[in-house]
Image (tube, rainbow, N blue to C red; front, side, top):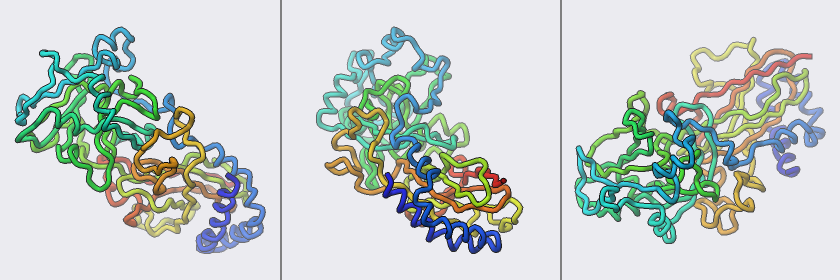
Length: 420
């Protein structure tokens, strides 16, 4: 940890000079403080302590946020009721059917009525040959922070599609999970069949997921089986999967479409803080840590911008593109992955990692990454700290898709007061 922190601070000393000179007299004073503290800042305890307290890269299973729907929420049912309705590995059944309104041409259907519904033993048989594992941050379309980061394991959904032997008129697949046997509670998502059958742009496959962080998927996380769509927001990754329909529909029929949501928007990149002081003394270095969600276009930089509230902002600069942003340090892969992994080891063959269990690139697309920065001390006043990502295409958050209903990417603002 110590060498990484030292490099972080040394690099920040260099990149901060230009920024603080741009602040005029106050900036020159802050720069003098920075210069005086440059050697001592390597041992700055506030930054070192903040980095050491960062959350693990993988979310502990009990710490995933839950936005499940249903009255009662299905995972709150008794063990007996879960067994009765197919929410255990021993009783799970998946029906794979033709859409009754816009049917695809299919040779095989899997039905409870004739005892051919797909069960967990059949899924495990497919897993012997086809199981895949990949990292993914699970994020709700309309919530400004991830629900959790995990390694998801399952069988590509296409393997089951091919067992149904579709022959023609298959354009879309839609699906839903257990919903207390009340049609009004049904929550449905859909995908074009082309995305299921093929993995464009080096994406992992859409999977029938049964494990998270190397452990069986709990009912709280959607078990025994859920859909997981790597590049999508959480509403596409339906929990407690029970029904799958092969359809000739030409458009999405997702439940989320009724809420004016963009149901085909992939994950966006954005940054947010995890720790920062609410108050500091004049001239005291300011340690800040945070995370970034690496969306479909990943992340090349994380930047911060601290602004004295009494100073004017550039008029009409909605996304602060003219502000004096400075680069934070994207932290390297952790020594310990966290997430309750058995023996703290990634499952073998996890996509994006080499044979030694190290990431092939960093940050990993569709995951999260941590960042940190040590800001030099400032004069007394009230300040606003903002953070943003720059993606691999050079787009600064919230671009290129700033619209709220296509996923959260607003620039976070936090307050810091400098006072004696």
